[in-house]
Structures are given as C-alpha cells and as structure tokens.
Image 1 (cartoon, helix red, strand yellow):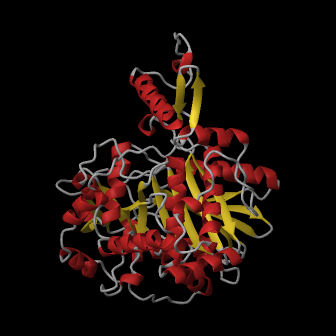
Image 2 (spheres, one colour):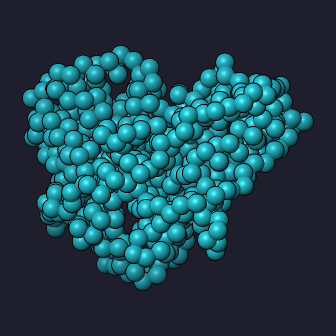
Image 3 (cartoon, one colour):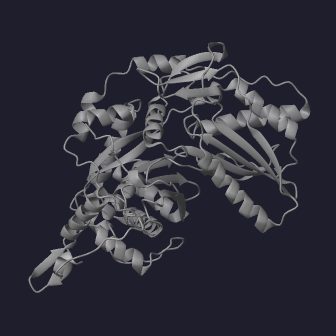
Amino acid sequence: MRISQQDIQAIEPLTPLQKGMLFHSVSHGESGAYVEQLTATLSAELDDAAFRTAWDRALRDVEMLRSAFLPEQRPEPLRVVLKQAALPLEHLDWSDQDAEAQQQRLTALMTAEKDAGFDLTRPPLMRLKLVRMGAGDTRLIWTFHHLLLDGWSIPLLMQRVLSAYEAATRGTALTPPPLPGFAAYRKWMTTRPSAESYWRETLRGHAHGAPLAFGVSGLPRSRIETREYRETADHLPADLNDALARQAEHLGVTFASLVELAALMALRAFTGQSDLILGTTVSGRPHGVAGMDEMIGMFINTLPLRADLPPDRPLRDAAQTVLSRLAALQERAETPLHDIRQWARLPADESLFETIFVFENYPVAAGLSDSESALGIRDVHVEERTGYPLTIVAARTGGLSLKLIADTGYFSAPLQVEFATVLRSVCSALAVASPDQPLSALLPPRGTALPAEQGAASPNHDTSLISQVFMPHDGVALMTGSGDLDYTTLHGRVEALSRCLVGMGVCVGGYVGVLTSGGFGFV
C-alpha cells in the first residue's frame, strides 16, 4: 500500500519487540503469526450505533490503532501513524439457528479471522465482528495484530471503549483524559547504554538450535507450511499455589521466578539438556518514564534467559540463579531480539529459543469480565499466536493457571499433554522440596507414564514411548549379540538420518526404500 504524505500524522521508530515481531513475520512469511483474538459474550442489550461510536472514538484517540508498519524501510523499519482509519466492524445475526450450528459457525469464523492475518501496511490492523446469538447475547470477536498492543494495554483500551459506549448510550459528552505521548519513552530509549557485551558474554558457548519438539511431521519447522495452534489449560488448586508462594518466600525469590524455574525444569526433562535458553517476556515499561503505565501500545519484550541446571544443583542455588537472570533481563528490557541474534552470531534459520514463558500479573480475561458493565461482558477469552513452537503462560487466578499454546505441526498433541503433566508434577515437587535438594530428585522419571493428578491429563502409552525415544539419556535402547546402543546415540543417529532425508527432498507421505543387512541400522 502506498501512503500519501498528506495522510500521515507522525512517523515513529518501533519498540524493541515490534522490531522482533516484524522481522519474524516478514522473514518467515507467516501472515497469521502474532495474531491475537479476544472473544467475549456481551449479555446486555447492545446499542449498535453506540458501539460503533465508541470504537470510532478509540481509533481517533489511540494512535497505535491507526499505525502502519513498513518493514522495507531502511536503515530501520518504521511505524507510520495515519490521520484517520476506517473501523472494520461487521454485524452478523445467527439468532435463528440452534446452539450447535451457532457454535460450529462461530468456531469456523474465529479460525478464518485468525488465518486471514493482516497487511501490515494497511491500518487498522484489527477487525471486529458482532454476532447476534439470541436470548439477548451478542458474541464479540476482536482480532488484532500483536504489533499494536501488549497485554497491559488491552484493559486500558477496553476501558476507554466502555466509557465512550456508556456516554453514547446516555447521549452525554465524553472528555477522556488524554493519552501520554511516546516522546518521553523515545527520549529514555536514547539514554540507554549498549547491552552488547552483556549478551555476548551471556550467550557465549551455548549450542543453539537444540531440539525441543519432535513433531508429527518429522520436518524442520521452516518446512512446515501450515500453522495450527492448540491450547492446553491446567489449573493448579489454591493450596498448591499457596505452597509455592511460601516456598518462594523461603528461598528468597519471587513467585514468578519459581514458576519459571518449573518451566525450565520441564524443558530439561524433555530435551535431556541442562544448559537451557527460555524466551522470557518482560514488561518493557520503565518506572522512570512519566505516564508509562497509561501508554497504550506494544512495550513488552521477549528475551533469552539462559540457565544451567545440572542434576546435582541444589534447588536454592537454581532458584536464586533464575531470579538474578530475570533481574538482568529487566535491566536490559529494551534490547531488540534481532540485535541479540546478531551478537550471538546465530544463523538466519536458527532461533535462540523455541519456547517462551509469560507470567501474567494481571490476566487480561479476568480483568475484562464485568457482567455489571453497560455491555455485560462475560466469557472473555484471549487466544494468542506467538510464532514459537511452544508458549507457556502462567497466571495467578485463585490458584495457578498454566496454559500451553503449541504449534501442532511441530509439537505434537500427545507431547503437549505430557509436557503439561510434567510441568504440573514439577510444580508439586517444588512446593514441598527442601532448599538443598538436588534438581534430579524433583523431576519425574523420563519415559514413564506420570500419575494423573487432579485436573491434569495423563499421557497414554504411545506418548510415554515417544518421550522415551526422543529424550536422550544413557539407558539402553537396543541390544544385540554384538553390543548395546543407548538412547543418546540412537537419538543422534535418528536425527542425522532425518536431516539427510529432508535434504534429499523427502517429505510427509513420501516413500523411502530401505536396504539393510539388519542390526542397529535396520531399526
């Protein structure tokens, strides 16, 4: 899209995570990556005109909603704010259909909206659908690109929309407080020292590209054309949440850092590696910048947290390490991931991490639900697509909620279920462990079916077999009269053969002739 100079209100630099998202979206060609979708039921009688008026007001007030992103701009990509943008709002009426038909059509519509993605040069990068369901209920589907908003901003924006809607239904004038501009944030960014030396030292010697997921396709992620994401939710009871909180206090760490340690330990169980990098989301809102908490935009950043977790490391030491690494990330929250990749000398087709961890201090869905508001908002759900194989989202909601968002073409559904079970098991073990206990004593046995705890799905035998084969360790995998083969060696040979076949053009559904004299080679 060509943008006329007379239509431009402002030209702004991108925030660190916007740079990373833009790079990832363009380099991988994924139109549906980083597409967020908020759905909710509006149970109050909806005033269609007032609803449109409220969102039109939001478009006028919030410059981020009128922003286009120009990835080809040199030397740096830019955000271009237009003077105005048309609201993409569509009304649908399915009130004459039964509940089953409504749900089927709703699921199909939500999927289509997410898959459609956005042209980043054509604002607004959002769409609204209102579906009349009958009995006074309307279903809201709000699809938007993550480039526009972080989780902190969504409630801020929705509160402005709700206030404007209430004023429009009453026919009263509304004078909302002006939003703080980005000038103070831009000035703060120019004062930040370079973090290059820190990141070079932190990532030195790490073997990047370590496998996490062993997907159903057997292809590298770059060769998987479709992107389908599956959510698995688990809710740990309040007593376990409280026990983890007491343990965090006893260890002298934060609750969030202890839960992130649990995520790292689950990754250790699945990869068989102790030197791990976990993508970690930080708020990116510096306390010293005036009006930072009221700014609506994208400020969070996802940075690599590296932790070495050998089996003999005491729990207290590991927990303190994660806490100190988190503090270091917060101090460098403005560093663009693209720069870190360059400092780490990472090949273009490799990722620093395949899994990201998000700890939500203020869960969006819980913060927006308000059945007493003018819209009667309930059943709020936010679905995310981060562009990574696995995202772990933790939130305190009367207990501890753990949500996994996985790319099913890369991280198969059975493995996702087993990962969720391992994560719950680790949390339970951490809650009652002694500070000097080694980490090896807190991990569930690899390759064995884990006990089904309350609210958690237990893996089937196929899942356990898969995890046994693909988690490198020293156990005996194959035995012949001439010798044994351990799982680590077996895994290496399978990976080498897989890479060779893929390099020769073998894909899913293809046939490969096998000529062998038997023995380990045949297996």
